[in-house]
Image (cartoon, rainbow, N blue to C red; front, side, top):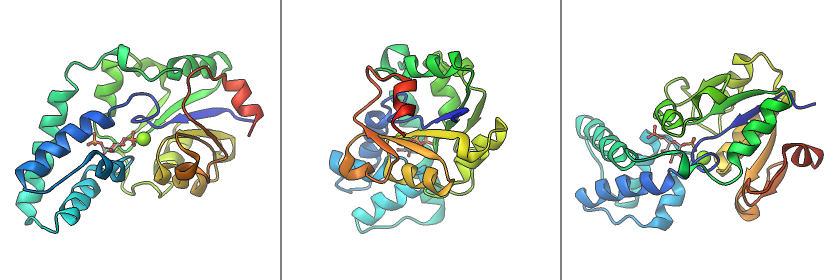
Length: 215
Ligand code: B16
Ligand code: MG
């Protein structure tokens, strides 16, 4: 049975994608690169470095190594400005209830996110103490779809991968969970997340035991 729930952050617990978009848009503008909200879909679940590479490719442009580093720093400064006011009101519908249901069922709870800002964001949302382990962008070397982030999360709470359930909103994250031999619930559109064990539009009104019964 499922003994551990592993949650992605952006798109599962909180919609930080809109703030990432504002910051990337500002950076793209400064580089003279056209960057739309639709382009931003390509960056979901993708690391900061890979995101900048995608934007430069879209603009058919490049930066030398110091400029690339500076752009990453600048984007993150702007992103941190945009999330300065983030609070618990921005927790996505159903997420907090599912966290509570997992805790009440005696399950381990872990975070598996590409974000280097995960701890800061969980603090702002007042959710940090809900997690037994946090594996984030500061701790992994291989980005999703590599299973590293989820395997590290499972090992941190000492649960076998086959007893873990991942919640993900990005296709690369669904693949990462499958590569880790875990069950995965995709939150979003079936066209994008069709390889997940189960696809739901979001966590609103969902009961953990009902979801697990459908796996
Ligand atoms: P940061 P997740 C991901 O979070 C976001 O979806 C992605 O858009 C972002 O580039 C990445 O975190 C890195 O974030 O710049 O804060 O380190 O979905 O893996 O929780
Ligand atoms: Mg995500």
